[in-house]
Image 1: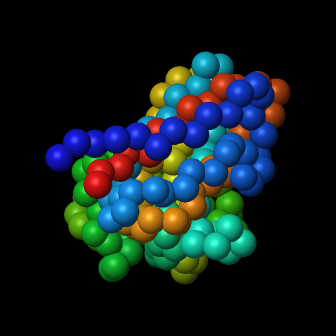
Image 2: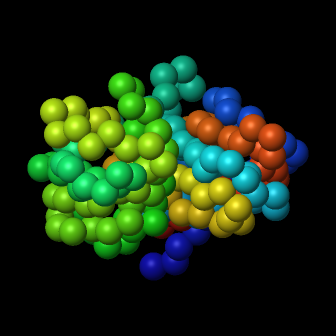
Length: 192
């Protein structure tokens, strides 16, 4: 079976905002399977990762991420800037290594998956990690590009299909500050 691309492009400097490119409408009579995301920028951000989301809608009013709900992790003690994260819902695979993850409050930060230990446990590296074992963290596996890099990847979508008439849009969840990053292309791989 052939694989196709749904392309989103954003020209100029990037900024964190929703709905930054023209929508895609699925015209395939039997829908499309969503496989994965690749990203590229002409000018990389230098300070923080560029993080994107692709959202789906059936009506153009209500939108939800194709990457699904955040995982809830319990943090285990680890080195100062990393920790093992456990989510019994898993499963995690080695293809997730290198993906960008976002940690929500109370200790919000952006990190990278460095190692998949098992189907329910992975190691993540953060610039500012709290190793408390009593906290739980909401972590989203997002599409992103690390600082200084020109290309990146996204997690496997948890929404695996769209139907004829469904809409997709691109959101930028995080861009840089002094050097924001510019000229973004996002390729969503699909199959009929």
